[in-house]
Length: 311
Image (cartoon, rainbow, N blue to C red; front, top):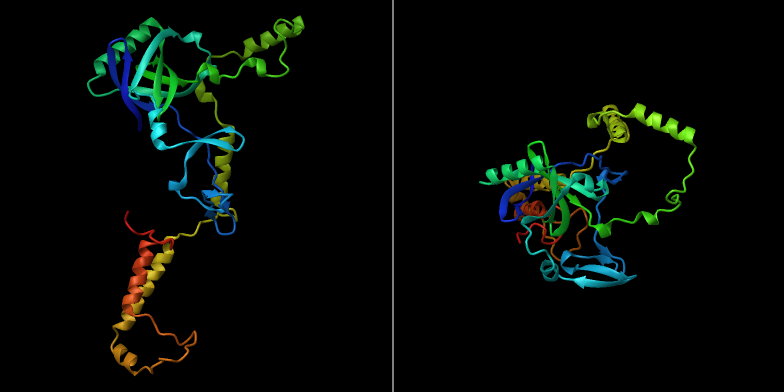
C-alpha cells in the first residue's frame, strides 16, 4: 500500500507515530474522450475565452467567485498562510460511542499502522479503545484540508474515517414533499405485512454478496469488443514515430554523402548562383544540417520552441 500521510496520533500527553493508507480504492471504469477519426485521446487546453488564446501556468491565479463574474484572487503565499499550523498530528478531542454518530457524516476510510518505534503506544491505544468500546473524535489535515474524523479499532488495526462538519450536512427540512412527523396515515394490515416481509429478508451482513452490476457489465462489453477486434477498437498514433523517421532520414543522408564518388559528383554539379531554382532542383541539405535537424527533432518531439531544452 502507498503511504498517503505520516504523523502521530495525540491524546493527552501520549503521541503515537503512525502511517496512513487508503482503505478503499476507486473501481469505477474511467472512459476517455477519443477522436473517433484517428483514435487519439482528446486533451484539455487551458484557454481564456476573453483573450482567445492559450494561458500558461504562470499567468493563472486561484480565485473565489463571491458574486457572479467577480472574484477575489489569492497568491500561493496567502494560501500557505491559511493552512493549519500542525499538519502532522491527529489530535483526539473526545471519546464517544460509535452508535452516537450517524453514517451520514462519514466520508473516506484510511488504515493507520505504527511508525518507527511507536508499536507499544499503538498497541496500547488499540487495546484501550477495543475494551472501552469508544471511538475518538479528532481533527486531521490531509493535503492542506482540515477534516473532522473518527478513530476506531477494526480487528487488530486502528482506522480513521474523515467526516463532514455539521454545517456541511444539508438539513432534512430542505427535502420537499416529506410527510409531517406523526401525520403519516398507515393501514395497520399493510404495516404488519411490510414488517413481516422485512423479517423474512433480514440476514447477517455479508459484503461479498454485493457487486457493482454496471461495472461487471461494462467490463464484459469491453472484453467482447477487444476479442472481436471490431470497428470500435482503435489505436492512437504514436507521436514518437515521427522522430524515428527523421533520424532514419538523417542517417540515410549521411550514408549517401560518404559514398565513393559523392564529392566528385558534387564538384561536377553546375552552379545555380543567380538562377531561380524550381521545387525539383533545390540544393540537397548537407550531412551536418540533416543530422542537426534530426537531433533537434529528437529533442523537440512536438515541434514547439524550446521543448527539448533543459530548464
